[in-house]
Image 1 (cartoon, rainbow, N blue to C red):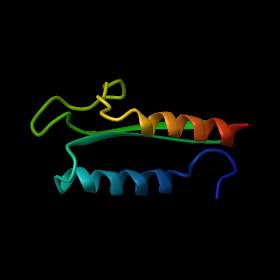
Image 2: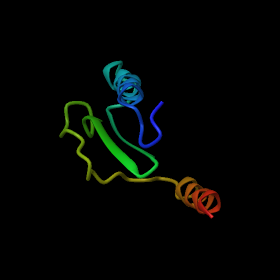
Image 3: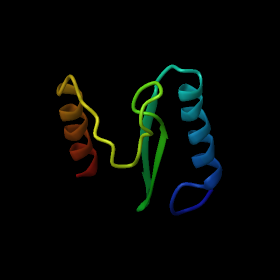
Image 4: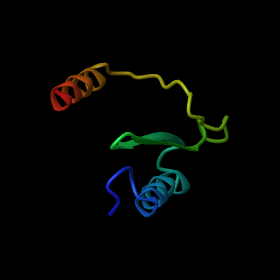
Length: 81
């Protein structure tokens, strides 16, 4: 296992798993960000809706509930410090 970053085999495996959700029609698309030891990768898969525009790295998503992102940000602050 590499000491810095995420090995290509793991990134490809994660991409394949996430792309499977899109291929099966469980979700129309997604943006995944992985970061390890300063090595960051963004993976945009699928479309904004069935047959819609493709998702890009800078696609803006509507969040219905703000509790989850606030708690996630608070948890990451606690982990980081």
